[in-house]
Amino acid sequence: MFISLCKSKIHRATVTEAELHYQGSLTVDEDLLDAAGLRAYEQVCIVNINNGSRLETYLIKGERGSGVICLNGAAARLGQKGDLIIIIAYGFYNPADVPADFEPTVVHVDGANRISSVTRGEIVGV
Image 1: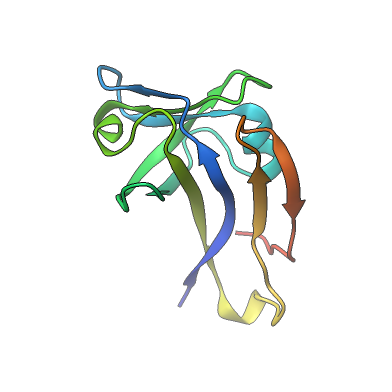
Image 2: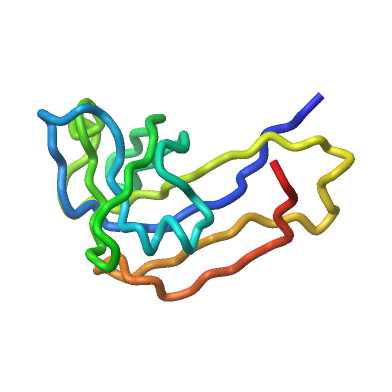
């Protein structure tokens, strides 16, 4: 049996764009993806702090250093420019392989989606 744990998240990112007429996904600055250990097409949960909505989608790479966080397609109905969101990725782990002090990677950003800090726990292979 495997368990699902939060492996990484980008905390309190600011939505910079919402593109309703785009094939669905979430565009994220590639610097943020790298810092969080995320990759293009990885499934994520998005939690909108402003309105409480939650959704699942996948990631696409945004221009490195741009600070872009763009809700695309149907996701654009659940947020707007300026909203604060949390982007959460989960991994499936064998409980026997997860150390007792396991913690996810958390990327904190400022209002322009620039990295202000990264904390890393011990992430085991997925």
